Every structure is written in C-alpha cells, then in structure tokens.
Image (cartoon, rainbow over all chains, first blue to last red; front, side, top):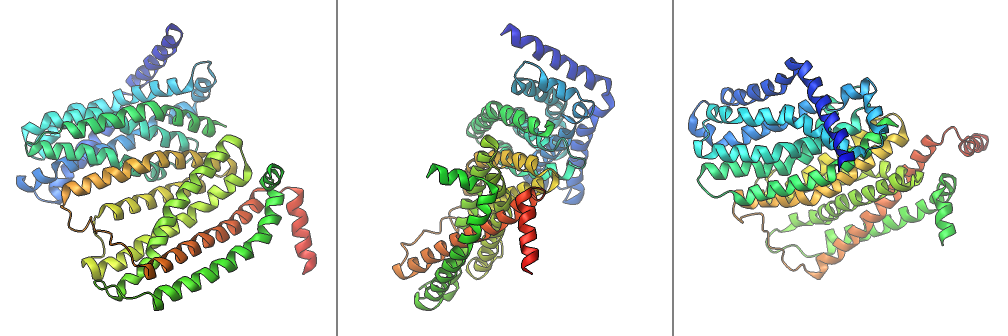
Length: 225
Length: 249
C-alpha cells in the first residue's frame, strides 16, 4: 500500500499543480458548457414549458460534449514533452497511474460541471426538485465519461489531428450514460423515483473504473511504441 | 493440424492457400445466392399481412446478422493480433471493418425501405434500429482509427483495442437503448411479435444467410490478401511474386 501511495500522491499533486499554473485554460470547458446550454433556448424556444421538457437532454448532451472536448489535454502535453514516456517507464503499474491522471482530470473538468449545473438548470427551467438528481447523475456520470474517454485519447495521442477522430471513437460509447443520466433527470422532474437509473449509472461507473484503466494503459503503450 | 495452422499463419502461405480457396467460396456463394433469391422471390408465398413487401427480409435479416457476426470476428482477430502479434489476424481485422460497415449500412437501408410502407416512416427510433445505427458508428470509428495511424501494425493494435472496448460496450448500449425506448413509447411497434415463420420463408432466409456468410469469406480473403501484400511489400516473397506476374505478361 505504502509503496503504491507515494507515486499516486506525487502524480496527483503534479497534475493539479500543472493545471493550477494554467488557470485560464481550466475555465474553457466550463464556458463551453454554459454557452452550449444557453444556445438551446435561442434555437428552440424561450417558453419554459418547452424548455422544461428538453432540459435534461440539453444539459446532459452539453456535459457530454464538454467532457469530450476537455479530454484532449489529458495526455497531450505529457506526450509532447516526453513525461508520458517516463511515467510509462516507472516500476509502478501504468494502469494505476492512468487512473490517477484521469482522477486529476475529472477533478479539474468534471467537478466544475457538477457545481455549475444547477445554475444552468435554472436557465432551462428545470424544476428545483430535479436539481439534486441532476447533481447526482452528473456526479456518477462524468467520471464514466472521463474514464471511457481516456481510452480514446490514449489511442490517438500520437496523432497530429485527433480532435474530430476522438468524437467518432468516444461518443458512441457515451450513449448509455446519456440515456440513464438524462432519463433520471426527466423522471425526477415529473416527481417519480429515480433510484433505478442511479443504480445503473453506479454500475456503469464501477465497470468503467475497473476495466478502463487497463485498456487505457494498453492503448498508451501502443501509442508510445 | 497444428502445423497446418502455423503454416497458414505465415503471410506467404496464407497468400497462396487463400488464392486457391477464394474461387471455391465465391462460386458456392453465387449458387446459394441464386437459389436463395429464386426461392425467396418466386417460391415463397406472399405474407398475408405485408403482401410482397416483406420479401426484403431475405436481404435485410441476413445483413443484420452479418453486421453483428463480423464485429465479433473483427474483435476476436483484433484480440489475436494484440496477444500473439499474428500478422494474418491483423490483416483480417483491418479488412473486416469496411465489409461489416457495409453490411450494417445495407441492413439500415433495407430496414428503412421496408419501414416506409409498413410503419409509414423512413426512420423510427426503434430500439433495434437505433442499436444498429450505433453499431455503424462503432464500425466507422474503427475504420477511421485504422486510416489515421500510418504504421499499419500500430494501427492494427490500436483498432484491436477499440474493437474490444466496443464488444464490452455493445450489450450495454443495446440494452440501455431497449430500456430507453420501451420507457418512452409503449409497445406499439417495438414488439413486432415474431410470428412463427413459415417453412417456405425460412428456407430462403437460411439460404441467403449462408450465401452472405460465404460472400463475406470470399471478400475478406481477397481484401486480406491485398492487405498482406501492402504490409509485406518490401519482403522478398512479395517482390518475387511481382516479378513472376510481370514475366507472365
């Protein structure tokens, strides 16, 4: 345990410090999230009845896109300056270190989405009863997005233009999270119990938490070879 | 047996053996397809509800079966390529992806053609249709990744991982889509209760399924041969092959 703890702590601290030094970049996915959500009322209708019906879908689709766009930074800079190779060469399990990096990335991009989501809920006329469900689904769902996305990013990190390709690889795999997340929020706004959907999201989270680091590590080794 | 398999795994032997086998598969495929089409279009009775329009299932259903079957083949050969670094398996995975995508597309198009007279709409967000569409996206992802990475061997391993991730996800996606749809709309169209199919309709269906499988084998052998040639173009045996083809002319 102790032998595994120190690299975990070091890597987590390093990633967070690095992100802290580029504070301005941190806000970008968040701003993207806010802007996309605010586009929908403009494009569809400002009427709160219409908005209320599509609010869960809007917020979840925007969260999906924001999570995907922020993924590009997950390994890119480490790959370019060579530190990713050094991380892969250490004696510690690469899967564990990948998990740490994904966790740091989620703290910096997923968690802010969670915090700002109720505000956006207000913008799109989401009933207050559904706010807690929205937070809960995002808390369970955004880590899944980061974990699945990490596999995709690891596969294309060596490529020059990976951005559009990433969406092709990752978005189809995001569909179950979208279905359960948006559905839970929609169910909650009509005042029905949502525990089933939350269990499903938790199951997806535990599945991706256990499997994705191995796939990501394998993909990284291929990209580094 | 083991020795035969090992020899088959070497690209050179694979090339010669598959070249000999391809016409056999191709001709058998043609025979089955002609029989199946004749039986399906002329012998099989018209459906008492859907009339003649149902006959598209003889293309649609085998295509949908193939779309799933080929994904499995692609994932398994991708896995073999990842674990044992077998060049033939890599070539098979890479050449299966476009064929599988075509079958998925065919299933979607024929389904939509059938849906227009039956459901009155080209596209319905039915659970099966939706999962088939997502399967097409997964195929396109594998193809795009294969095309994006220049080194063919790295591309094969990367898309192998992607295909395996897809295999883990396909059941999850499928069942979440089923759940999503049944929750949104009642059992109006989703549960087209499968009538126990008449034997005269089943026979052409199975004939066509066999024909489609043989078609896949034929095409994948041709494509894999091409893939092997491209991958090994700097090796002596490919150069010699080129020489003999040139001198024949």
